[in-house]
Every structure is written in C-alpha cells, then in structure tokens.
Image (cartoon, rainbow, N blue to C red; front, side):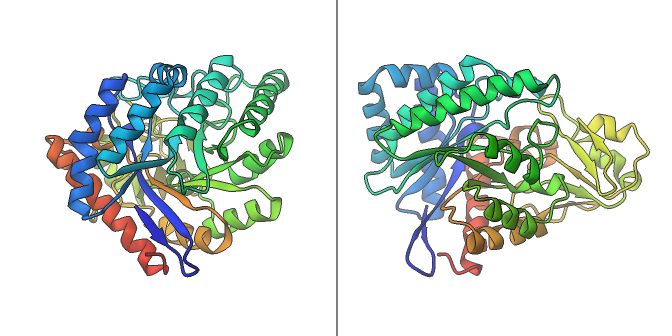
Length: 372
C-alpha cells in the first residue's frame, strides 16, 4: 500500500511473502492468486505492496531471462500488486520442515550469497514501478556468530564491496540492508554501525527489524538516533513484534507450545542471559522478563500470560518516521504456520484474512503517526 506522510511523500507498506513456500516461478505466481489478491481485496486497496521473497533458483532464472522478469511484472500489475522491496535473507527452502541455522547459509563469506543478491538486484530493477524512488533488499547480518574471525570478516567485506560496486552499475537505484538478528555477527545497532563503517557505501545500509530490536532489549529511540548519528541509512523496516513474558516460571506450559522445530527462537532476558533457542531457555532457571524471537501477528490479542513487544513496535515506528528517511516498511510474520494450533490458520482463506488484519493494524499505526 502507498501511504503519504505530512509532506506528501510516499511511504510504502507491504507484506513479506516468505510466509509462503514458493520455490519456483509457478509457485510465486500461484501465491499471488491464493493470498495476495484476497489480502488486497479484504483491505479495499487499489494497489497492494509485496515484499517478495524469491528463492535462489527463482532469482537465477529471472536474472537470466528478461522475458520472465517482464512476465512477472505484468502478472503483478494485472492483480493490483507492486514490489519495491525484496527479502533476500533466506536463500531457499525457508518453509522447510526444519530451518533453524540453515537460514544463515550461505553467508556473506560465500560467493553464492553475492551472486544471489546481485540476481535479486537485477530482478528488482525490472519490477520497480516507474515512479518508485528506489528499491531495497534486506539480507542477513553477515553470518551466524560462530565460526567467525578476522579472515572471515575480510572475505565478507570483499564481497560487500563487490556488491556495492554492482549496485552502483545498476539502472535503477537499489540499496541492500543488513538486518541485525540475535545470535548473528551483527546483532545490535552498535555492531551494525561498526560493520557498515567498514564497507561504507551509499548503496548499503541497515534493515531495522522491530522484533529483533526488541529481543536485544534495545531502546528503539536510542537505536534510531545512533544510526542517524553514524550516517547509516535505514534502508528498510520490518514491522514485527516479538513474544514477551514477565514470569517464565508461570508460563512454561504456554511457552512450550511455541518451541517448535522449524525456526530458531532466540531468547533474551532483560538481565542479559542469552539462549539460541527457546527450548534452551525453558530448560534454564533464568529469571524474567524474557523476549523471544517469535514473530507474533501484529494484531494479536492478549496472549495471557504472554504478551508482545508492542511498545517497541509503536515507539520504533514513531522514531523511524521522524528521525530517518526510510520509506520502505514490510510486515514480516513468517510464523503463521508454526503458531500453536489454536492460533494457526486452517486454510488459505484464514491465512489471507490474518495477513490482511496485520496490514490493517499497521495502517492504523501509521495513521496515528500522521501517515495515511
């Protein structure tokens, strides 16, 4: 959806399609009719923004075939859909039965990551609406933190330098954003500033995922101010919220329903205790409150005894809209299919309804901040 700020500038709001398990071109087209069009119709929107996720084989095929890129653009337009941003974090098989640490492979030391991201940039240049100011691609924060050393950082830096050079040669302005995430080489705002200062380029910046920010117990106002002071561009924002629990002991049975086998759910306590997955936290006696990297639906009602990091969401959006130039916002709740059964959609219509409800919630949050 296209929103307008107080000055009349366009703010793009999309939902991320990595919630759908599409691994080939036909799968991508199928999800448009199964989900995106019903979401747009439920919202009553003339145009719906999609943060497309294209698995590496699809990105390669599109990059090699201009006719295929043209077809994808036409298929989007015919359905009242548009794309200004791509999610380039997962490489492929993101909705496989078990993902866990595989989502960080290949990392930025591997030439496949560079090839994939350049493919995405080429594809996005042809998908961008003619009047779009720029495109954006989010990517992983270099790598999982282990193993990591100076040699691996040197390899990643060399590839990011090559990426920046490739983006500079592009026909449309496209920026790539490192997305800090718990447990990774770049987890915090300070680490993002340090990493990007080593590969300074107008074509690289940061993707602020508000659930990740919450899990790090970072103050969103301070985080945005740090990025601005350091001259690091906020290229993209993922509008998301984490699970939160005040008293883990009283909620262990409820929390156990979120300890599922597909994704990592990094857990952090306010006292600084760190767990790479929720089952590890549940086996500990770490006191609360905890925040858990489990993207909860934005419009989720009270999850008593759990709650969500909604305060970080609201304060983060306000800070970003007033203290950054970011105009790409993406709702990224990829966890619908691993929610506890009572909260999980049972069919395509239910998932489309849930995504539409999230976007409506996000739209209301923007309206409250003067962006409509």
